[in-house]
Image: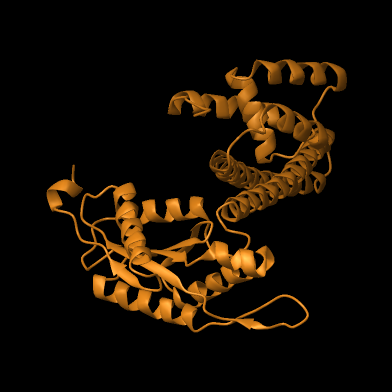
Length: 351
């Protein structure tokens, strides 16, 4: 983990970083916070030297300099850390913005009071008129303070929008990193996250979860006979079948190569077998248009499916292995079929 500071330490670094950020010409966005957090915490000596050199030369950091420093010295942050920083800075900017808004309102009320006081002083004649120049100076200073707070508010609003946009971009990039480009399903990384989330939930009151492991039969022969472009069309077609028939809280993924997986968090064994048989039949009845001049439809495309239902305390790897073993059994028994894995003894599952 990149940052190992305690809550008290990180709070102090936060205070110091915000102070430094507010002195620059760059917006108060997550990239700025990241470089100044590392600067004030002393964990990035190269970054410190680079910032000191820039400040000595230019006086302040603008947005271009901030992004350049971030990309060169801090950009190895993973997506999860960047998202966390984005959330923290957005929250921080919101708090500062609220404080600035409150201060602006107070300054406005104070200015109004001074205006009324100045008016009352100007009405009577006599020696009291001597106090007016001083009041005008105070009013002028108050107006300047109101303008400064207004400018700060605008800057904070812009920074808040940038922080929100960056957080959305990081979240979108993280989602895209877990999606298979060919099929539009989750990829292996996305599958691992989804399965972990499923198994880490509180024990369900009902049945499940169940896992389907699906493999395209004789895929090498399909590629050798019709070409890899057609093979990709077949994989994409299976992806479409899964997207059309795996709904709700269920999750479909391309596990790797020609192998797919379906996580069924609340489905009993019988329901999992029924869905698997429906998917198998849909694929077997499908026809894929061949790329080329004749545009012929190619059939005889089948899948084999292995199913496992989860046993309490079972490790995720063992759960997947049982479904995979059932898949291999389906292959060995002639392909184009569904096999349900035997349940292990409870004692073996919890070891």
